[in-house]
Length: 299
Length: 281
Image 1 (cartoon, rainbow over the protein chains, first blue to last red):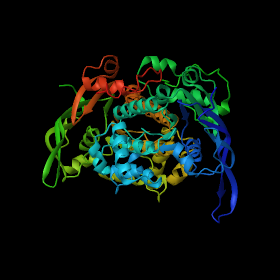
Image 2: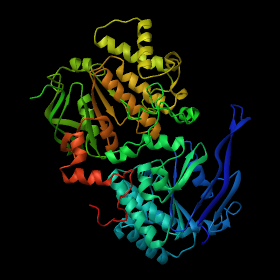
Image 3: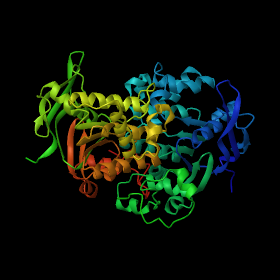
Image 4: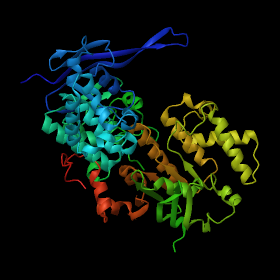
């Protein structure tokens, strides 16, 4: 077996909690000994709600945040020390959540895409050729290079952001909620594009999302994060088809669905006082399934 | 003609910018019968929010102008009634649950202050008198109705002390203060985590059925449509393109647009055909 594209071992990040005088009064474990591996060419999904640590993990892989413990092996190389190296940045790139704020409003699409090319010392002629190539890859007309973000729709902006991420021919692309700001029909087209590009360019994706339905369709392997820990992981079909952890069950039970088949797939979560329990309540409740007859859909 | 509580008939709205008028709603009609849950679904720019604002009288003129149509509430046209009359209905008999629990609450006042003030003005418009103590009792009562475990403590809190889900509950409580007959909910829970959203939707559904309210749910999420409504209007480009009982819509969408929209929704069961960028409309 070839070595994985990305291997994360016991990764931890704690942030200090400071009181009003700046004195450290404790720590919060944002990421707590997380381990997973992403094989080459795979789409690995990290699912979690706000505060689960999924964005902190992305930032550490990008070298934007220093881990407090553990290792990140990118293509076999430990990036803990050399996270900001040129080589690392060429290998892993990121597409952010909101294309409205991740593109500079005063740069044209072409200029935005050129930023990494300039940083890596490409000549002017070289850059123009590469920009045209990248726009074609994301299925935008070549003259879009002259347009400013405000002249583009949300989906078009996200395509520009994808083109920018691909400028340095990375091997791993971190997608942080790439479609959560988009309409559902636009989302489908962006995901189509990512699947096509992944196939053509042999990309590996780390896909971070809270949208489980999308994850089921896009990611082959999934890790479910809760309070900085991976509580459950495995092939997406089996984790979603037969969730073992209470939190995964609650997440799946909460997804609004549009068909009876999907509804049948959602686990039954016991109600507490007629209400859907919070994650803390449910996990505190343990695996007592006596009251489990009332489904989350309830009355 | 059906006896709908709210009936929007052939409403057209245009926005004028730099002297150019752009039609935003083109003959929108929809009915919300009493005690019924109706959804209005559409993508961004479809006109669902403008429809809601036209109903609530929140469109600013200029730039917006209602050029045609009637909005009947309880048989009376909101667009032609005297403003004072309309004010009596708005926020009392028909009220709104807003989307964003972060920006819909004032950060410098306690929940009790904010709900109390709303109640005071609603009472004044209706010519009802209530003492401060009676108002606080009512505030605690509605907070309990939205299943707050400790209404007194929540009432004394500032918004920042509450979680996103709690704040959304406060917004629902706010809408219930003066016992409305019609609730208009604009994407409730969209800003929240999926588990919290599920709690909010269930609460809203329970309240609406318990108290026999009519609900107009405005959303972009077809899953939310299916879980909260019995009848649905689909909007696109300022028009209603299809309207049917919710179950029928999902079983057999008639219009091309609705079909494409439903096909674009990822399913929990998987099986979505991806990597077909060229094939997609």
